[in-house]
Length: 153
Image (cartoon, rainbow, N blue to C red):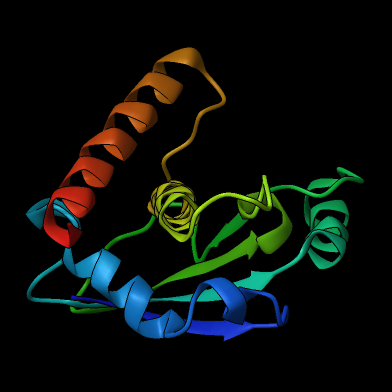
């Protein structure tokens, strides 16, 4: 089972997402069996942020002086899921997810689910630096997303 501890440092998240922790834990419960870690206690931390703050983190940790949609910080280079495992931290920028500002709540949530899955896979050491890794990660993202959408709708 996956548990997501959600923190927010950007007030605008509350305008689009009322029960943040409930939302992300529901998303994780809708993952395919392989990524639910049913008989284990897997946890991660999610920080809902904005472009200004994520830009600082991106500069400090990746030496890129620009905002980004998401940052993932795996707890280790090679993650081994044991009975109880903390897999890492994800930070998502509200400003990136909320473009265009006129999008519906549904589209906002769909984009958020997709980017969350992307960050989650990075915590599991998926990468997209090489083309073959990109294809593998993209395919896995699509499978998880399809599972989540079918179960949440």
